[in-house]
Image (cartoon, rainbow, N blue to C red):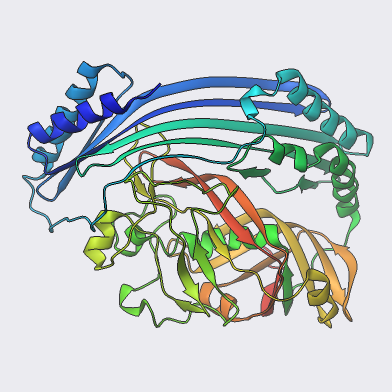
Length: 478
């Protein structure tokens, strides 16, 4: 069923009410989730949400209005209301707001999906989670948990410039977690990531994770961590696994290159940015091995789409090339203010929220090595992987991360397991110290990126591979 008519009615009503530009998204999202604990199903949830959101531009001010009603009358009323809000806001003087040019697009897009996640039976999904948590318990976990989530989103987008786009996005993911309780201490191991692995994909992604097969190892490692020596303190060579590096990219690069933060338009949750637009194209962000791309068209990654919520086609761009900062995540209005000629990174988490600049797939291009080669070429250092905690200042510059597991590296080989490994640094200094990079890339999915007021939850993807960094402070306490 198409909802182009309702979206068109809302846009036309906004124009008739005085808007010089308007767009409307009709969204219908179905969701499903399930969790298990210690061999029993703990919670099952499902729901559906449908509505439309209208943006209207009057003078240099935006107005936005949303309704959970897809009737023609409600759509027209929402369009008029958005224009009225914009007109009221325009009575307060402000800087000019234009939009970078965009060709009108009429298109349909859907991601690849071999197995529809919502067509897989609840009993089969329950058996998977019960099996994974039972396997972890039998292997020694004091607490075993597992969960999956599914999102099925349909959008119809219409703009006053002639856009007419429909998209169907299916996303899902899962994980298993094993905890061991010691004397005043809890250790946890997660597979395959601290929050699970997610993608713009069908249920085949969940099946590929082999939750039941990996659960016993998670339990055994969690128990072993209870008696492992603490990560030593000091400055050393640090090798990060790809899962931890994905969060490093998210926090110290992805949020920092959001143009609305750089311009000072947005500061909620993740703060502003240390980057200065006058340095775009010349600032050294990292070593020459550092090549960060913005790639919303990457198949299967969680931040993928065909068109963003302004109708801009998914386009791969450089954010950092050979260590130099060269690109940002932008919307049509923020790009115009900054004097840039591209957008394509605007999304909202639902029909009732105003679209804003969000990360898509921000990832590190692979290097020439393997993780085994990196370790073999390291005389003395520490390997860490799988995030446990994170902290970064509101300019996305100074950070401290904790990981679930670490190993010492001695004479090119992994040594003892290390408990509570942590590291700290300053973004550009840290990235400039990267001297070896693996080719073993995985596009890690983050389904819980927070931004905005009212808060919005973003789905982002971060291709990352293991990498080595020199002279990093590790074993930070407190």
